[in-house]
Image (cartoon, rainbow over all chains, first blue to last red; front, side):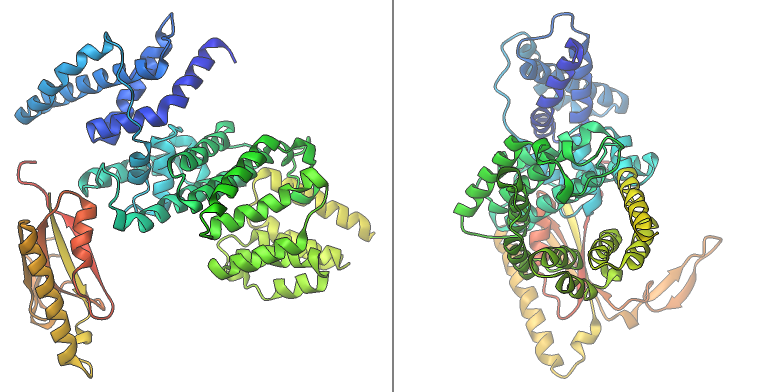
Length: 410
Length: 119
């Protein structure tokens, strides 16, 4: 990384905290973003980068924000904005004086972006845009819609925050469970969407951003076991990033991945979070999902996969969060732990129509049919999977798999 | 900030076997809410509306004068049965009031910020 790129990276690392403090300061998401962008631009133009980048950006962004309010109010000729400007004058000194410590308002910002009054998909988009600063084009590709449509969605969500009076305060204790669920669901959706992008086709920074969000979640909510569970889940998924795509660009399934390429530091971090969560003795779906992934991750240390343990964990997951996708994965685990027949029988019980994305079901069917020696049925399942819009890396993987099956038949 | 809480409830809920009891319980719920509102000192108002079959709708087709029609503007399973207007600091606080509105059976409460006069 050259010096300028390094500086930009440092600025973006400081972004969530700064945007959050600015949003709380101005009670305005748009203004916070615009002020930050203006400060970032000014920072990147400096010949001598400031020592305290976050403090510098904060001071400049606050001043820029006040300038923007002044310009807006001059345009609108609104008399009552004068009060805001008066108050703002005092802040001008900050640029020269040592910057104040920046208050940590990230949790507030997370709760605003993930408010249940905003639709789930838009929440995820809003969080990625406002907190991570991802370009709208990247977010649009992530959720498979056009850039203008995504831009409109985000703009509307911001208007909702403003118009509906979504508070810039932390939620009341009594609202906490509902609001926390909304936050966790939002991050899960963002992670699930990003995980599809095995080869990093959408944006190489995307996965890293989601990883940072996950770490932020664990950092901000250390007493919420499910927040730690979700952070662990996302972090383990990220630990396999280097191993998920082969040289040909084809996806490599978990069982065939070279564990030497797994990021052990990430796995360790996830294990620590999961241990801390377990100490609270309040289990939940994210902790169970993370435990399943951690069980897979053990292969990096002892070369084995404890399939009976994984089946037990899927049983537990079926209790707390049943769904056809859990059943599909449970079937695959049963095939390993017990027999192919048991797995196939379990898979037969799944109704693919109930799946939002039926592709994993057909891929699972192909896998078990191949193992059972029914190559024709396996090829048929692969062909169905191919029609369900797999991303590039998965498409290549499925094509190669099909070729192997065809070759074995002739 | 002022919010309007629009109560959409099924009128059928009040015409079943134990209609009188449902009505009594619902009214008691409203009384409790009104007491709470009075206690808290927030500015509020609200009204119960007569049944949807008493509604008359002036419908505009987009060209010219409106034509009078019998009944509410939308044919739905739930009817607008009443509303509250409360002064609340933010959406969460408005939702908190909305949650106290009794709804017998299925229904929905729409929470809409009122456009302030000065904007």
